[in-house]
Length: 233
Image 1 (cartoon, rainbow, N blue to C red):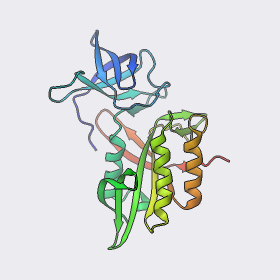
Image 2 (image 1 turned 180 degrees about the vertical axis):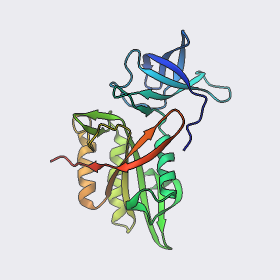
Image 3 (image 1 turned 30 degrees about the horizontal axis):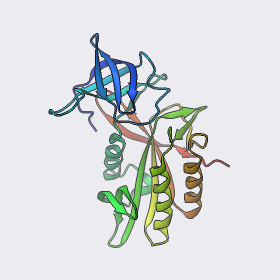
C-alpha cells in the first residue's frame, strides 16, 4: 500500500510524554504527535532520523505526526500504529497470508466478550475467526519481542481468544515484525510476564500464533514473508 504524504525529514530531539515528540524540522523545534505509545528506546534516541507528516485539518495541538523512524540497521520503521492492520487487510484480501488464505474479512474492530478485535474473518456460511494484530519493533539478540511495555489489553486479548475457541469460533494472533534482523518473534517475558504466560496458554488452547515480516519505504509498505513464532520454555 502507498504511504500517504507528504513526508518531511526531521530529527528526534526528545519525548516529553508517550504521545508527544519534539523534533528538529528544518532547524526549528516543533511538536509532533507520536502515534505509537511503546517505549521505543532503541529507536527514539537523540538525533534519530524521522519522517513527519503535516496534520490534516485544524483543531490539533500538534501540526505534525511522526510517521517513520530509521532503525540502527538502516531500515524504516512505521510509528503509525494503524499501518500494520492496513497491511494485514491488504495481504488477506490478496491471499498472501497462506495460513489464512481461505478466510475473508467480514468486519473490522469486532467486539467479542470484553474486547474489540482487529478483524472478524469468515470462511463459508458458518465458519468464523477472531484475528488480532500486533506490530513488533523491538529486537534483542536476533529475536523480535512483544510487547515493549506492559500491555494489560494484549494479555486480555490472548485470554479471550482462547475463550473464543470453546464457543466454536476460530482464533488467531498475527505479529507484524518490522525488523529484518529478527529470526523469530517471542513474548518479552522480562517486560511483561503476564503477557508471556497468556501467550503460552493461548498456544496450548489452540490459538494460532502467526508472524509475518513487513517492509516500509518512503513510498509504500507491504507484508512480505512469514517468520517463526518462538514460545519460551
